[in-house]
Length: 241
Image (cartoon, rainbow, N blue to C red; front, side, top):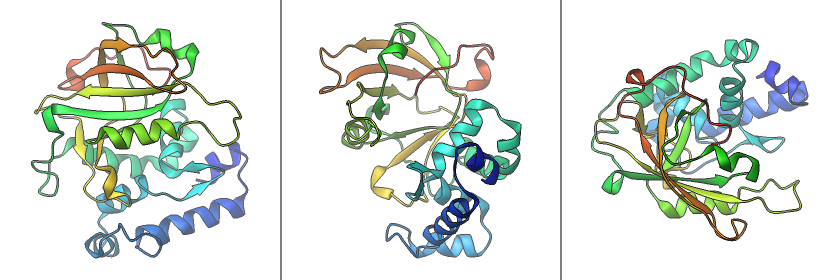
């Protein structure tokens, strides 16, 4: 965290406090959503549980959560950042590609999951019907459309005066998709997070444009690939997700 923090203008003391807050939250000291079984798993050295709790942390430094720093490192493919974060990334990625007892049978209703956020106008033309692309980072979605809509409504950063255009992604997932899984150990379990591995492949099925995306989000329909390994490695990377 020190390297990426420094480049983001975060002081060493701020990073140290942030890391301490992360650890405290993961151990249940700051968040009631963390069950005692998760805290025990961390104390017993279960790296997969610890990584999931870190990923879903609500702690922030300079307005960013830990998951944002992970995706920044992946998106920028920065070796200096990834050197420190690889153990956590690997543990989270293992969650995405391995079925386990905790996540068995947990699949979105009708095979649809949702993601909400901002979508700057300059990136909208990328998402055309038939486009197949990869996402250069973990992609968090939810079983619940209302959760995704909540993220869309809160997507404009506090420092921006003007509200940004919003988008709601609606993603079809086949039952045997191998690079997505339910986040069973979370600091915010009410989100019902369904997490895709980095560089997952999606195809644009339909685009519903909103007449005023600052009030009502665009809706982009995607289809998740069944297996990333079967898709071309040179697909374009999404400029926004």
